[in-house]
Length: 165
Image 1 (cartoon, helix red, strand yellow):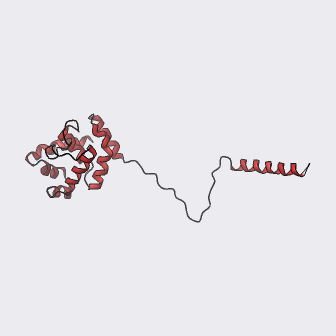
Image 2: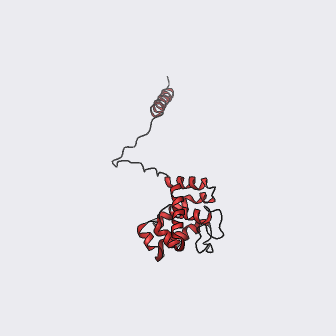
Image 3: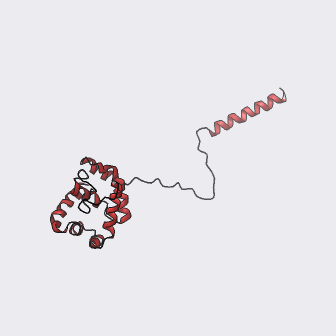
């Protein structure tokens, strides 16, 4: 055999062995730093619960389930509060002119529905007459502040929807 043929044969053999060795095997990187993959973020189960709740009531607010959750978390509010207020005030967002929460007797509009959620949540979290609710997180305290003349009835309505979520 010629020198060229032997070299060619050896290259083919090395390539074959390399391909067989690396085929269907993970390449492991050796590192002095221990590797731990970043945890996969788990979807927030509350979003699915809220979507199912709004879906049962044929509400367009189903599109804002995540917005309700993120806003409630940001404002340190109960995540069920604004959805149930919307259900009491506007039949779960079906009937309203400016905002689904009856805020300002439904005359205050913060812009889009998502902006309404953020605006009302911000006001509830910051206004002094919600101080007791923000301290206790008791829905009755909220009802007394939000709809004082009809607090008992309002509390029953809120509680009805709370139990549905």
